[in-house]
Image 1 (cartoon, rainbow over the protein chains, first blue to last red):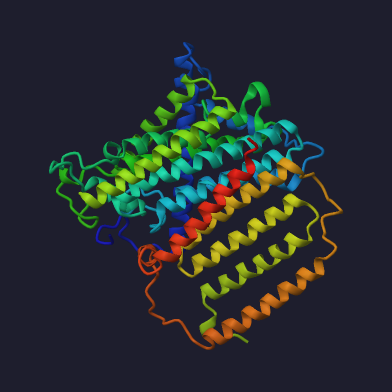
Image 2: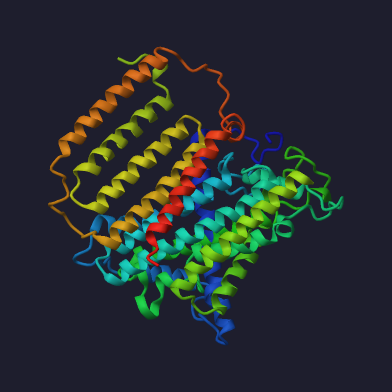
Length: 353
Length: 170
């Protein structure tokens, strides 16, 4: 992989670390901002036959900065009986889990933060840490609605973690690796019945896995129809009820940044990630990929990510909320059995074919 | 005090993480709030994951995070928050027989020290030891260790079924 490097000059270790930090911030915050403006502000408004924010900047495009400014200048309030240290810690745990998640996402043949051998397994493990932040946010607020919201969130996130892991196993079996870079390579250098013009995106062979993964992502992000933990009509705002100002902002950024990162992981697992079918340019291995792919790759991944996020948001704005018991039954009695069958079928075909 | 070949990044990292783990472990048993104790336990478990990373055992480290922090500790907190988890200090958290536990812990420490010393002594890892990759690990589990793996799976399955039987009232 070192034959094509993006930057020719030797960068010292501190310089590389600085690049990584800046790159990580961009990779987390840029998708989050785009998702909030394009989908949450504009698409939702159009689907509801209204214009959405129009005042700040052309077509309200500066609305985000206005919102952030509003939150930042608010007073930092916490409840009198709250456990203050834990109350302050909780949003940071949620945001940290998002930043740790983006570490394994590859953006191009050489444009990655770390090349973890167990990439997708690491992503699933780190994403489960955010549950901890949500739980203690609910507990430390000293508010029964917050506590109920936190408990609901924990129950839901544990339930939907399982089908998500099981759906990914199908992809891992087919690609033969847990490395996200390897999964991208397997899809783009693959062929379908000898035809390699499209590669072999796993969304075709792992269609069941893709559906289960997207449903689980929807639930992990607590987006409607799985927004029972923050159901405003019964729990005010769930575990976020007592948070205001920049602490609420951290939760808000965490929610949509995680949506962006999960959409990137979904497009890497099922849609070919940063790559185009390698047969188009006659590439066969990682080493033979041209250098310009390091610049085109992030754009391709970003485009696919926006497509996947569009699906998530479309579902969010379209369906009414599931009841708590329906939500649990759906995970344990429908999704998990189907994903287990999917693993069995995939494993059998992998050995037989 | 230390020879130069011991002063490498991995060793320094090991001692920093180990110190954090020891402090965390002591705070688990001395803190006066159940949820704080659980969160200190998270620090200890995360420290163990970091030590696995230092040993270049990626898969074990990630499993530690997924199973212990992502599942066991969340279940722990979930359980305490459902039953009793007040905010602020509680006075009746200490068991009055706590010194028995201290004795057992010390005995276990001595036994492990003796076992490690007897088992490995001054043996050193070969410097050019290839990393244990995830593939090697799975080849071992599904090769020579298949039977113990199956046995463990059955024990876990029995535990799961037992839990369901106990939890169902009808």
